Image (tube, rainbow, N blue to C red; front, side, top):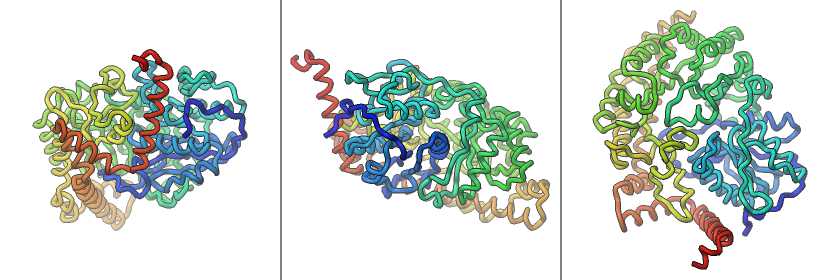
Length: 565
């Protein structure tokens, strides 16, 4: 058994690096994610390019695309970098633990630790991870990871690595000060992402380009702006389109997702990006996340459509004015309806993103929001439970680490993160308990994704707005007609997928147990917790039990007086 905190710092040569982005559950498991499907690697292609520019050989392995072979990772690579989201943290940390036991050097990072806060609660997720792996990088890794790799080779200099949390030489955890966020000019000098090093990339039909760091807004539940800042650190439009072109050339994708949290938030930048796409004649179908207010700039909307934008993923959240105000969301039902009308007038599909459980949400308000989304003709939607995102303002100021529902304790506490997907109720409010938040979220999805609504686009006439837009953009009568028909077909396919996945989620014994647990007490609650554990990999439980035993033993070594008492 290898104790992470006692791993020696060894001088070594580092040549080969594996960048691993694990899935929520091991490859081949039925994740029961309502929005399941192959996910594009997140930071991997960009970080691979940065590291390759420094002379390292890098492979990017996504757990959504490929099995994660522990023997290969431990023996083929000098360093394994594991990048995790909150809901993939248990898988990633357990994998890291196993690799450490095999003698591998492991570094963890990713959104789970990418905060700028410095209070005690902010470091809880990092210290949890350090029970599994020897090094965790908080925040951007562009400068911190290369500095850490250099320190691993030389055997010193760890104290100067910004944002590094690690086991110091005295066996105590050290949290280095956070690294300064890279300036816009430096971000523009980073190499273009390299998708050729992504294993099994031929499976990718949707890929992502980012180009925008942070967000100028301040939604209280969001971790993006709190993590990446609110200042303009966007790539120059030419550089962004360079990344887009390189991504298209290196993959066989059908569609590109502009994964910035709020692509049109800075209007002049978004316009310049679209103008550059048009100037180069790039033929690309893309979607983006966007805010409601951007639709007031009709010039921007028209440019986006001409540049190939076919779908806006709109952060609508709720039609409850008090809920919007309570989460610092600057919009109203009127502005949302104006935005939807402007987009539909141009044939743009809308994926409405809603949150259940915001301050002042109540069951009736959620149901009104569902009915409103149907009346507005939204093509697709997501209704997700409000969750506790490390790094968000709410997480740091409202004590969400203690308020959120965490069914597991003791050895299995780390497993609580697998429920941070939005499908599982974790936060109640004054008007809705956990069971009600869960029930209303699922009821909303089931109502919107009825079979009747899924099939309806196939039975209605061609989408005239889409047809007119295609004609205005120079398409022939035949091409415009085909595109209008494709619009209806795409809507039907996506809704059928929603209908299928929602009902699969409901049938899952794991999800049934979680829903029942929200209102269970006593022996029944303990029985349901055990049922949840039985649906998870047994070797996960064994690894967690080993880590917990070590943590308890280490605590007693540091606090002998408590042990004797």
